[in-house]
Image (cartoon, rainbow, N blue to C red; front, side, top):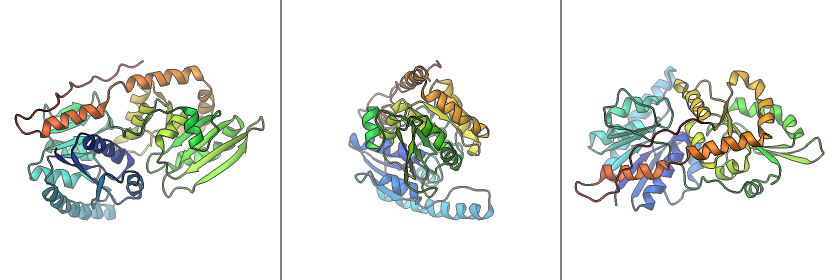
Length: 380
């Protein structure tokens, strides 16, 4: 048994894989503490995991605005000394960081105190935290085909994103019933990531009547503080009732992705990993102001692998027609699903767990053999 600290707060894209890794480590008999932020999305998501130990870490995101820059510096300093106390108290065998502003203090503290540090980057353009902290790490897990010049040779391992064990494909009709939708009707899900996406929320409101006229049900996850919970009853051209649901947060993502015939979404790495696990086709609208334009790179790879299509936000006016054409095209949807299932043929969580156990094991101890790096799946 070993102890681990996992830094994973700030966004759902960092927290969800941290929870997945923690579940896997606990299942193998290890002790885990997850370091998260004080943001609402963290507090909301961790409610479902009372058996895991969460500690809130001081910190604020980076920004060039003078006020944001000062706040970042002050909170990072507090976070560093807080992290030093955590490392000394927990005495972990390893520290895992999933990037973002919560990772810096704990990674530096771990490196200074001689604890092996591991970093995971799921986006196809590594973020600032990973680029800066990678030289302190014993392992840096990156998407297949991605490398970092700042990381010394032998440290990088190709690795997908760990997905929570609850995220798995279910029967579509049962999932729709669970969400309060007609089990027989077509379903479009609109996702803006853990922060929500005002542009997609507005699009969903504008297209509501046109979608309902075609008999398309809607479930839009608007983001905390961006909207209110609302269920609307509309009519199709045939006169049949059609339901539209707007929810600020959804903690039943497996049900939602299983219920949906098609998803319109931002292109965060966490969302794409869950789409792959549930084999749900998507039209991706990358956030145009994402750091280093990483969502555009994520979306391009997803489309190249045959999981769906990409529409630039500048052409959002064409999205309605694309949705209506695709959601009734069973042949194309099935092709997308088959490609997504192929992309999910490798389980990154088990590979990562094996490698972590090998990394922190005392010399001469028996550990699972590390699996060889898996090549990226070929495009179809």
